[in-house]
Image 1: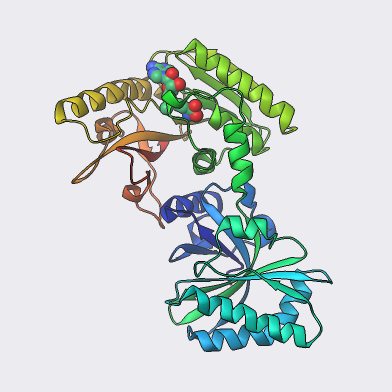
Image 2: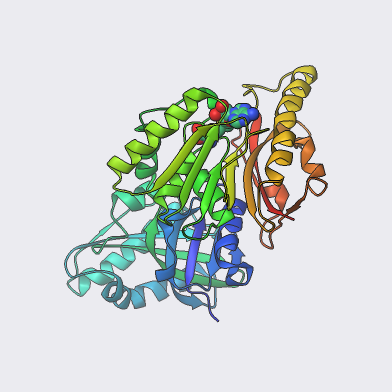
Length: 392
Ligand SMILES: C[S@@+](CC[C@H](N)C(=O)[O-])C[C@H]1O[C@@H](n2cnc3c(N)ncnc32)[C@H](O)[C@@H]1O
């Protein structure tokens, strides 16, 4: 079966690959540089639920070369049929993104202008989005409305000796993420709020079935439960946290979400120490960002670092033992746990070495290594390692 959908992955492509693999299965997927090809039909891929995909595009054609002059000629020759299929009558805006080519952005803009000239000759009026980089970023695609009826973004992706041409049908709405992140009534920088995109990825890694119960035992301000509610799987949302203030925050934020985003969902939130709490049954899936320990602006001395690691590890290990007895066999647990970046590489949570003894199987992926599944920014000491487990 041929690949039908092209996904442009986020800043850390491995996270997006693991997410797609969890949802669609490894055989549906082929990584190509910063992108992935999917056999899945574009109509069956819901971009707004994918934290790790920046753009989704419908595969149009595979050209058996990566020579840019040939690609340019091919695009110019076929632009009329692409417009007929993807846009409505009238003036259209066109953009072009090239991934995996060694080209100057001005060469891409020159190609788009050449396409414009061809269209103008046949009486079609076109506006072109100039390239600052060889690829248009998500804000450019969004603001120029290139996925709407009067717009078209063409993607050229170098894939070995061939080029995949595709038309973008979805772009990540950075503003919608920012709105629900920053406009939430209760926020708390100290608990290290989870970015909504990463929350989506974590939920997709667990891939909960419709109408099951999803528990976040470290719910904090409720970002995970909020994103789970928006996924519209009629999940029963269940949250707990040791801090009464956080319980209040999560409730307030979920009520706000329900009001402002017209989503209807059931939830229950309670105070509980995750190392000893008994949760109401059934709990089908656990997704959480566990206690990350103290944040560090720069690498601390080794005593301080050891203390921080010990502190997080103690809570984590006790939680893993406590919840093991309360989950069904085969139950999924997806966690973001701290990983500390030292000069020599990442230091992992020590208890991750004892998962099998604690009754868990760590799931690995075909298209991403577990080592790659650490979400981090270059200025952070504490990253978040994504751990996907199955209760034995
Ligand atoms: C990293 S934060 C989670 C943030 C959350 N994902 C959010 O977006 O707001 C960790 C949370 O774990 C809670 N916590 C710390 N120790 C705990 C324990 N033993 N049991 C339950 N919650 C705990 C903290 O109060 C904090 O809200």
